[in-house]
Amino acid sequence: MTEQGWPPPPPPGGPPNAGLPGSAGGWQPPQGAGWGQPTAQPPGPPRQEQGAPGTDPLAIASLAVGVFCAISCLCISFVVIPFCIVGIVLGGVAISNTRKNPALKGREMAIAGIVLASVTLVAILLMIVAPFGLLAGALLLAPPPTR
Image (cartoon, rainbow, N blue to C red; front, side, top):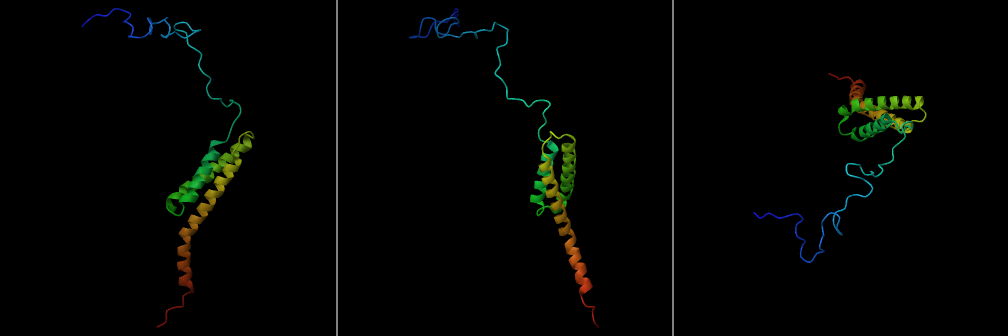
């Protein structure tokens, strides 16, 4: 192995000191900052002020659960019943939060979540109870058997 000295020889056809620190076309340390001093960072995304609340996350969750219940009620009705109850409770808590803090948004979303979850719950209960009601009505209205 041959030992090369520092700096390595320039590539053929290039400037005499290309690629060396301090030479034209070579690496230059950042201007305005010494070694070990941090350079200025670009500004990050704008932040929401600490005191200014936005939309209540419970209102968003209530609406999302209500939409989920409404879409999936025809497919998996027994599984959706607990989700409907959760959507109604989340919406009620979100409405309570928006009443306590008027700057908090999302009351309309919470109401929509409660309505969707409630209507879905009633529809599921009707789908469960209706067949039994029809069967009972048919048995009551049927003429008695004759011998």
